[in-house]
Amino acid sequence: MSGSPSNTPIKDAASIILLRQTDDGQAVLMGQRGAAAAFMPSKFVFPGGAVDKDDYDVEVAQQGQITGARDASDVPPPALAAAAIRELWEETGQILGSVGTWPTDHPPEGWASYAQTGHVPNGTDLRFIFRAITPQGRPRRFDARFFVANADALGTDPDCFDRAQDELSHLRWVPLAEARQLDLPFVTDVVLAEVQRFVTRKVWPAYPMFMDNTDDRNIVRPLIDPIT
Image (tube, rainbow, N blue to C red):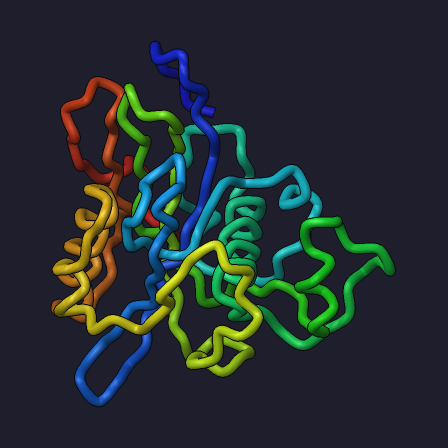
């Protein structure tokens, strides 16, 4: 885990930027955090959250373009992928996975409801594109990794959010060209700008980008090692 002079501990986290092709172009799945939330209240965000201890014990099949990315922490890439997939399920009811049987009759507690759907997590479509550390002085701080995935990889109806666990409200597919007009956290706006740039060019970056806020300068730079 990244170090910091701040007294607020930095938690590892993962988010999914889920893209969907529509008649009006690409759209992105977003939801709104509660007004009473301690972190980013009322802001529109991507599905995501902190890495749980159970995520380390989950096997993620075919991890996509994430294992070759440099990650300056002790969190294995499969745990980050698992966290992103689990958070997508919890916050939206959407499943990124394959139909299959778990290797154990008793999946980790945090994955029980996902396992009951008859799916196992599959990260084939995940692409690691961005990493950001929450600036000092915030009530909560995260070392967040952002993954892009395509809605075609979902094992669920992309318009059905009936199984979402109410962590986000107003879940909806927002046209990518309009998403930055929402009330967004600064980092979400930066990540969306990067996504728009790459979607327009129809090519994804060779290097994930990194917004390092350890000295509050909001410097965005490529990570050193390319995605392989």
